Length: 116
Length: 193
Image 1: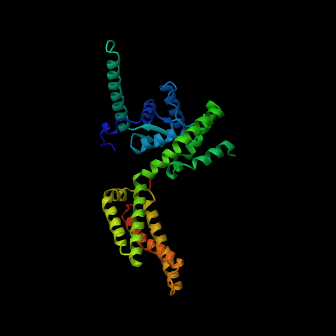
Image 2: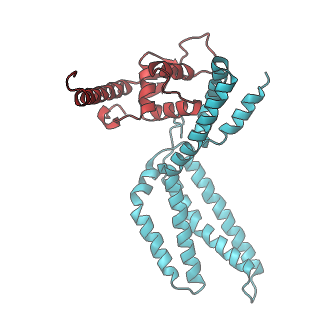
């Protein structure tokens, strides 16, 4: 997977990008990722359980995220599974952020040429 | 520890998801549902989860249907059925069955890349599953052939037609699944299929 070009993954589906952004904060379990996605999107993006785990499965299958073997918080519920971003996931997340940033700049320039 | 009824209902709904997904994430989904109830309340948790089920069950089912491995298996079954129909036609003196054999050959050649790619991809348990299907089909063929030999008489009835039909399909499919199974690489036991 490490030989893959990050740009080959772009554009990332919205749900996958939101989950990767949540994982930029560090190792997280599923419910913490959902809460982080809600907070970062000001409550606009609300993921149901299967949407979240389906998205995580796709990220893991593509090598952008991985399950942790260890538990960061030993006092936490034993059933919880933790995830973190891989190196490739970080590159893809950064590339998608750059792409969206360029898109936002273009949009602002076209809509408000006096301000941009 | 007893399972709350709400979990029982949600667990039942989780069975609607494709097997690989529900096997891997069942406990995570239940845990997530539990967290939602504690965090947002029963009404909000049930509403969100119900909407999630309505959207994701058909979505994930469809994804599985169009996935490479599943499509390859479907293709093998279709090619076998068309070839079997061709053989049955020829055996019963309908020589237009040659067209069906030709169609099966063309289909196999046209989809050879997809079939070869699916065959080369190691998936946990797939090799064993294909070999088991082959063995089961061989048993069906032997059973049909044995019954056919015992009951065949001067008149051709529906019973002989069914036995010949099922037996021919099994006769063609068994070696196809055997070859496909033998060509399927053994998967890394740590990989999730």
